[in-house]
Length: 218
Image 1 (cartoon, rainbow, N blue to C red):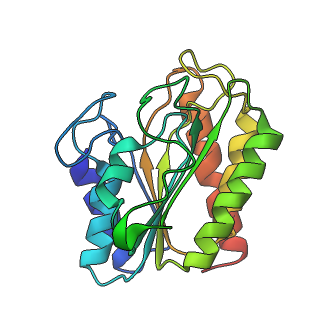
Image 2 (image 1 turned 60 degrees about the vertical axis):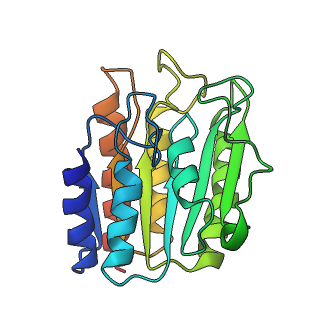
């Protein structure tokens, strides 16, 4: 799983405009010294670090999984070369519970480079995309050399363990909005537990992203 993310990072660092790592198990709940939530190695963080190692100065990680990427936050919390932005269920109600609050903004050199956007149960597309725009604005101000997307699709309205209400069409809208950042993007698969819809929703994100990217190439 981590090697798939590294391969995607190598493609992006070599000039590809986008790559998708179909990772199983997922990774965003794993930190330097702990694992959880089905995650053992943090694929997105490993990929972001590889992009830095290959010469990129600034990398943004956008986590759109329903659950907060506590591991990713922990890994980069004191760094200013990686911006972490996460939209997720309120940790007062949802796993991982102990991290993901809005007041967590980073520490030391990393202060101001961690943005959590927790949302309540029942959040539908209008409010979710409003939070997304806030996150995208922060990414634009950061001016990253590349974007790593922790692509969880458990925000889907029929996901069995999550409580947002995005439709399959909303994932197409997400892909198009991400393409609007006009930076190379590396998608790393995270959560998604409706087995009938996970493939449709992932393809909707990626195909809309690619369509928009081809219409306005990076």
